[in-house]
Image (tube, rainbow, N blue to C red):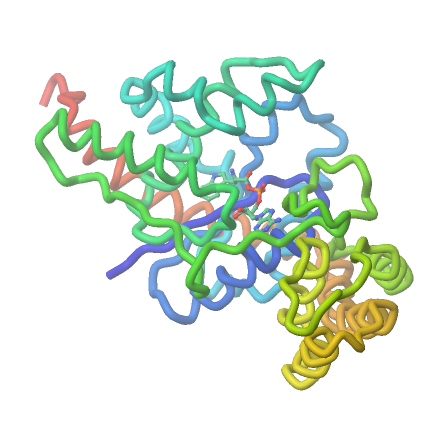
Length: 335
Ligand code: TYM
């Protein structure tokens, strides 16, 4: 039986990248796999010193978002990371299998190290260890994530492999990144630079959030960067235009996409029309999710119930792994 696990940080703003890169896959996987765990990675957000008044709202919104997108607590365990103390326990033990050098070389850490003003705390350095603990605690086989998490996944495999090798065991499962598409997904920013759509982008116009109003969605797509237009038939698309076509493929009807592809290829395309159509289709796609998020946010006791049930299942699974790990490591002194 294959186990699936994934999570997202609760920043309050979930965008199309989070949705198509991750959450949409979670929703499909809960039907295709029996053992699914999806969680809200609240501990991971403390690396940037969150506001205690804002964090609870963000966690509730993340839970509402998961459920609004279609996660079903009867099919998957949906929980909050800090409700499962087995995760930090495994984190501590796994830290002994992570080398300082490889943590410092991790791209996310290096990026933060370059950003002025970011405190380089030990939590940030050991972020990949905590992420590995999240995954290995359920001995998950498949981890649905976007392309940006690939390196973290490789590190989780390395830690697990080192542990297994040291103790001559195959107890920890080596997890694999998963997507239904051939490659892991990267949804591009609307600024046309080819960078990923990101929560930490300072310009909110570069991302469509699942909580955006219809007007905001239409405005953002209208303003999205395109290019000067194709200069010859069947021209290669720029990052900016490819990004818009990628979104159209995700939210529009196949015939709409085909129509605009054809117009691009014979150079008759008008990007204004493409953006208006994409805007409308995006509103039809995101609107119902946004409304559902709002509806669920007004039911905190239901969200609490889901989180409590999810945590119970996750703790049971986590405990089994921890018992095994402790036994293997010899943490069983007076048996
Ligand atoms: P986070 O919260 O940044 O993002 C959540 C998920 O959304 C995906 N994603 C994207 N996919 C495609 N295109 C984009 N532009 C885009 N932006 C974000 C991410 O790949 C991710 O799948 N470290 C993780 C959270 C985490 C985790 C875990 C994930 C903690 N522990 C264990 C999996 C397993 C993160 O910061 O994701």
